[in-house]
Structures are given as C-alpha cells and as structure tokens.
Image: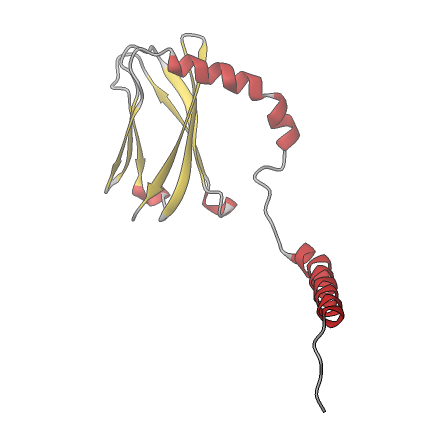
Length: 150
C-alpha cells in the first residue's frame, strides 16, 4: 500500500501542526514566572521628570564622576568642587531582587569625595549602579552598568 503525498495533504498537515503549536503556546507559556522590576512602577513613572532634571545636573558638572572596579570593591570619586553631599546608592540586580543593595552616604565639604563599596556587599554578576544625592540644594542622579567579578 502506497501513500500519496499531495498538496492537499501537506496543507492539512501544516494547519494541524500550526493549531497544535498555538494551543501549546496558549496553555503552557502563561505559567512561565516573571518578576517585575518594581512593584510601584506607576508612581516611579510619574517622578521620572525629576530624574531627567537630576541627570541634566550631573551633565553640567565640570568634572565627571569616576568609577573604578577594584579587587577589594568599587571606588566612586565625586567631583571635588561639590559642598556637603548626602544621598544613597543602589546596586540593582535585574536577575534577583534579593541581591539588590541600597545604602545611604554622607560626605562633608572638607572630606575627600570618595565613596567605597566593599566586595562583601557584592556577588558575581551584572549590576546597575544608581546614585542619587543632594548638594547645594541641587539634586543629582547618576547610573552606570557594572559587572562584578569576585
């Protein structure tokens, strides 16, 4: 007995395969877990204009912020012309919320403008460094992607 493969058979097999594929996607892909970047995304979106203004303030600084990745941690050097600085930094890990690190800091006008993040706070992987601070009644926002190798 010989089975003939014609155009009609090919079209029917293609449609059946496509329907099975679409059914698989419809029933099994919604069960794939995902983690939102933020639980308060709407409120953060409303404040985004403030962040844009703070980023512009960073661009107006005469010297840029310098970041050095050392074996002992991350060293951040602020421009020396700034007065008292107080703010916070966040090391954001998109892969896991449990590995995020947020700390506040304060630097006086007379001190060296160096912020050091020790390696004990870091795990190997990709981080987004976000620094927000206030100096001379001006607010600043700085962000940079980093990769930490332990």
